[in-house]
Amino acid sequence: MECNAEDRRGEQGCLMVNYSNADRMRRGISTLMTTLTGLCTLLAVGALLIILFYIAYRGIGSLNLQFLIDRPRPVGEGGGIGNAILGSLVLLLISSGFGLPLGICVGIYLSEIGRGRLGNVVRFIVDTLTGIPSIVTGVFVYAILVLPMKHFSAFAGGVALALIMIPIVARTTEEMLKLVPHSMREGALALGAPQWRVILGVVVPAAAPGIATGAMLAIARVSGETAPLLFTAFGSRFFPESLNQPIASLTVQIYNYAISPYDEWHAQAWAATLVLMTLVLGINISVRFLTRKKF
Amino acid sequence: MSAVTENDKLGFARQYSTWRRALSPTGNTGDAVFRVLMLLVALLMVGIVVAMVIALAADSMPSIRLFGFGFLTSQVWNPIKGDFGALPFVYGTLASSLLALLISVPFSLGIAIFLVEQAPTYIARPVGFMVELLAAIPSVVYGLWGIFVLAPFLRVYIEPALAKLLWWIPLFSGSITGIGLLTGGIILAIMVTPIISAVVRDVLTAVPGSQREAALALGATKWEMIRVVLVNGAPGIAGAVILGLGRALGETMAVTMVIGNRPQISLSLFEPSYTIASAIANEFTEATGDLHLSALVELGLILFLVTFVVNGIARILVWNVTRKTGGVSRAA
Image (cartoon, rainbow over all chains, first blue to last red; front, side, top):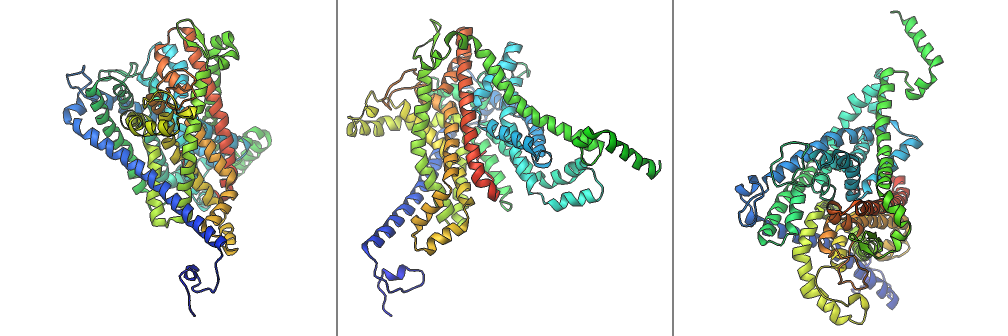
């Protein structure tokens, strides 16, 4: 059987069909569109790589040990981001202290207890909380904490970050708990354990790696937040002394330096960004590799 | 204690404390305590949202009382005279977000289609992860990149070219500075693309394989098959786009750094603009008086209500498509 090139495109080998122009058109469109989708993807990945390499390129120049441990100094005198790194860690500790336990409890409620209409309402609320702009969270915390206390504080900043953390942790915890097989719950219940012991002793430990993953991603997410800190933690040019005082953070420092008119501060902003990106991408990529087998 | 009295106790509990059974079907006190605790934490979430509305509404009362609905239609924003209108901010927020969606939606659809329908797993996984990493980059970093890389690039290459080619469209007139609506829109587009494409991926994955097989069996080309899949997932895709809109509306830092922050309504994409979120970020700590602060909180209240409604609609649309197959949205 003789085949021309056109016919061999059929998957079954050689079909004796004469393709009309309309068919050629359809195939052409198909090839065109499927190529375009590939190009879209290429462009997105390209954008990521360009941004990351540019940060590394600009940031690496100003990065040295002195920069990492010093506090900010006036233009021309060098200075560093030591206080901002410390401040960011303090803020992350406060927010994790509130956000992780509360988020995990909400997750447990959604997966194990709230199965009815109320559970759906809570789930909906939690989902929409995720979408509330972080600047609005900042305004809210300003209204309930900063105004009554009459000053900015590390504590208020931590609470603002915790509010962003809770819904993320809650939803990942819920999804992870739902992956635990029902037979494990039934087995524990059949042995006479009350529900709370089944949940805390069997279900949660079984899902612990997944919950930890969600917690790490939530920490990565809030470590990049700037907007809610602008008028809660506010920022500071000194090393933190008390949770009741304004505190510096990497992100707010980057913002302040970026919009300043000094080239030296711009260079410092890039270096601080490199530090921040190392933290954020480090968490994201290590989570990905730790969980590669499961997802 | 004998077994009989234990049973009696259980019987007692069953008979006389129906409220307790409602709390704990197992009749175990520990369960009741645990369930109530978890319920309280869950209700705390509802409480937080309610408290947000109340706190924002209470603090914006002076502004609401003074300006009423005129707040939304007035173009004047004058902290010194104490005259506040939100229209330029509402315009800037909507214009930048819609511009972002206009750029981002075709790309996001393309990415999702490529990853779900075309790429083999060994490509789809790492590439999908890289696209998701775009969402992990902090907003302030996008802003920094926008100021020092994107804005100069647009000023030198793209905007002059657009102005030269399309000068007859008012969108592309005006002074070329690199800082303005277009730059804000492009930065936003890069930021919402991973979110929209992640949700569209979930939606496409949830479309049953039999739909694809049926289309191919009827002689459809690959693209025609994909169109069938897209039509099937249309409500979910709409949800994904609205979810992206919600994110774009509330995005603060990156936009603040590149949009120029001038409260004006201009048709030109090159002119500086101002969004609700940037106005709050810029002016909150430097508010000149109680009324100024109150007006800013009212802006926050508007933003809260709009994003709440937008996200609610999006979630319902996406849920309806992905829930049947138990799909888990990748977007946080």
